[in-house]
Image: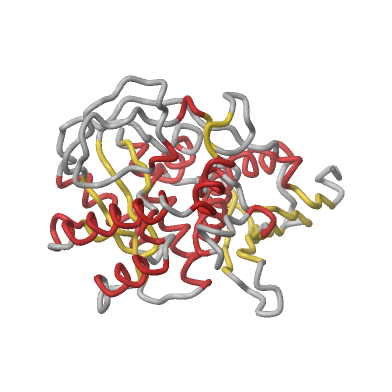
Length: 328
């Protein structure tokens, strides 16, 4: 097939780096050669305390792969994905191959348009319920990428999961290594190309809620605010587990997040229970028989907040070859 025009490829790569990642670490690199784009896990950007096994980093790589694919498809290019295609290269998270032209669907264009508006909202949400139709749309988005959303209020798991979030936050607050790692990546300056700037952090809670947001993502310069008492929480799961499932979960997660953005919803993560061994084992047991939980989403209505920075595509692109694509 003919290779993609450079501007389409540049747009797809710019979309890829807008994916979410823990503390905005951006643990990915990309290689482009002819009609193939590779997404690589960048181990130099792992959270060695919070994510030593790269579970959250692989979610981020899956999310970046989804952004790439949806942008290419929205521009009329057929794109197929293989996740962890080579056992001898475990850090090759995904390979995206261009396979001719196709007509973009309205949904693909809608999701691609949401890429540059999606952001993690760490601020209080409004006390406004997410209607059943939107809850169903998010479940459908996860299913279409091989994942599933389990709403905790409908499953009876809300209270025990919220308890694990609080327990994990307490453990992490008392762990000096964890606190130092979080401090390195947070409270960055406004123009920082990675990490979480102070302005993107939430205000301190006026009173404790049923779930705890990250203390490291609080901006103490803001006045205290009341947070919603019982936000809608959705666990993102896959039927299987392991690195392959983590990449696929990242793709499903990103489709859910973009669908939420397109429908006017705000989202953020409650990752704490996945980052300490004791609480991770407990949350795995809570969902035994249903699926493997990968992350916990806080979903609702809120006011837009500032986007966090991203490194330039040139900084994460290791190769660009082919007569139609200029070398970097």
